[in-house]
Amino acid sequence: MTRTSSVRRAFAAALLLALAFTAWAGGSKETPAPNAKPKIVIASDATWPPMEFVNEQKEIVGFGPDMLKAMAAAGGFDIEIRNTAWDGIFAGLANGAYDAISSSVTITDERKQTMDFTAPYVNAGQVLVVGKGLSGVEKLADLKGKKVGAQIGTTGAIEIGKVDGVVLATYDEVGLAFEDLANGRIVGVVADSPIAADFAMQNPKFKDKLKIVGKPFTDEWLGLAVKKGDAKTLKLLDDALAKIKASGELDKIAGKWLR
Image 1 (cartoon, one colour):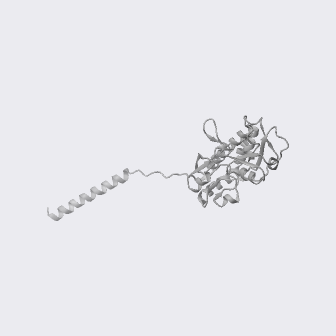
Image 2 (cartoon, one colour):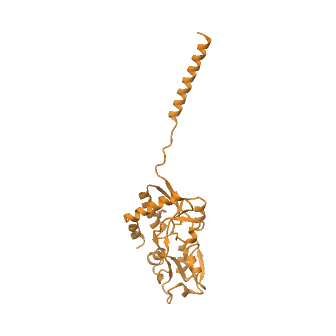
Image 3 (tube, helix red, strand yellow):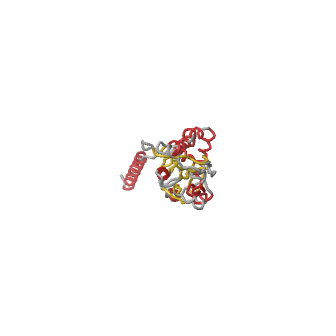
């Protein structure tokens, strides 16, 4: 055996061994399966029955969660709902802490400057709630010189601020405003009509103490908010919302929670 042939044989053996090792290593390497469904993380301040709230089993339930579940099924995506305090919820969206907000957010021109909205899904005008024993009150202007409560940063608080002489009392949660109203610490609460109806007409703590006066004095539409410029998430949500509107599923959910 010559020196040249010996070197060639050794080189060939090393090459075969390297190829075999590469094939073994490649075959043993696990390739993660791609996620078939996109996932949308949604923030919700779950303190607004019947729209979104936490039940006795610590589950986030209500009109909004049921709507989102129906949308996810119709749109072919997964959702994760995170209970998020209202104070700071919009900042979290801007910072990318979640993909969208479903929390009875009224679509306004001011908000459109900093976030994008889906098509509207519920008209929830503001109404005034007062104590059952209070008479002669039909509108906010009838409460000049008095304290009227609303959740901070909501359109209810904005509407109170528009009326000269009415003193705005703000709360982190709308339920705290209704507690103060029932206990006589304020004389009224302004809230979305579905929320007001639930507290004043269905909640056993308040239904014998509170009443809605007058009619809704704003025409407001609720929408899902996404980060400004997030066209992908917006399209997923809009397409799914259109499907449950067309199928009648959204009307069924409204019938369950809002009527």
